[in-house]
Image (cartoon, rainbow, N blue to C red; front, side, top):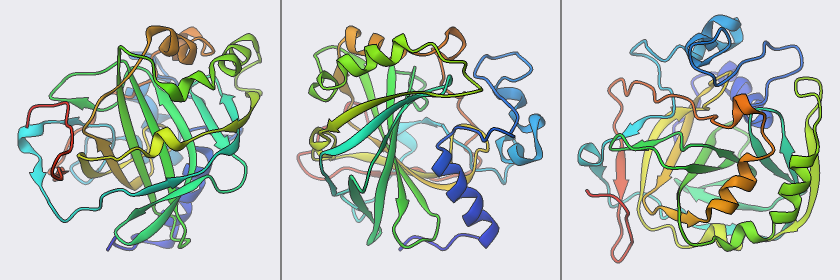
Length: 284
């Protein structure tokens, strides 16, 4: 079973954060992913008291992303199989000037973790991948953000890492809409660019998961709220360079690389689920 949140304050902070899904409110300080700048990742915790959790150095912090060293991952055969049930849903593509994301009308589906149902709230893409495996980054990471149906504010994220190769059928349906999003040159910081994507089929995202790594971490953008159950899938998927370019094109130059640097492990245990006949793309 998943442990309860430490406090009501933590629940509220996390619930608000996942609703924004790494977008900051209009009255919150801006931030960027450009290293070495005033608004860059090294300075997020200095921009506002609301961002204090972004200081990932102290040993008490459980920040994300991390480098997953596969030889140090602890096998755990009794972890969840991450059974997902997603349905075709009306969706909206959003460009907030920092990331491309997708939100849904209604309830697009759930994943079961620790016997609890977590509803899918949004998708977001990061380039390159935020999580590294044995020190290596990949070109893209898709993060599926879920929130507990029990109202506890608990968040579970499934991360799919991609390399450039064969086409991924999921992105065929987004090609025209991503191009439309790239053509919308709104004033980021004042408004987001939004494109109605229509009915988006999510079935390919519920393929049998097989192996994955789990650890406790945080959201990867301000306010960097913690107590997030991360599940990084062990199989690297493929997409074409054209599909990758379509996902990056709508973003301004400063956000085309929007992966937060890896954070200290601080003694956390990374567990590993590897059922029989599953495929894993990394040496264990």
